[in-house]
Amino acid sequence: MFPGKLFVVGGFDGSHALRCVEVYDPAKNEWRMLGSMTSARSNAGLAMLNGVLCAVGGFDGNEFLNTMEVYDPENNEWSPFIEALTKN
Image (cartoon, rainbow, N blue to C red; front, side):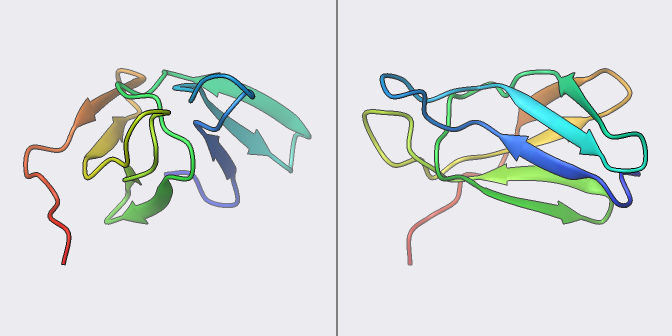
């Protein structure tokens, strides 16, 4: 779905955690904004699982998150993953 692309998700601007998502295409030397995540996250994990882009955990500026959300490229939207993650 996104072979050879680089993703930058969330982050921290010095005051707030961010929801923005950008993708870089090195073949075109081009950055593009994607739909924003449902939760602001800094230090989140990002993985492509079975062709689905997933953002996991992170910090929202107040607390550490134990949630996950997935990206739908057809609608350019993120949605919460239904099952909550638990700390082990």
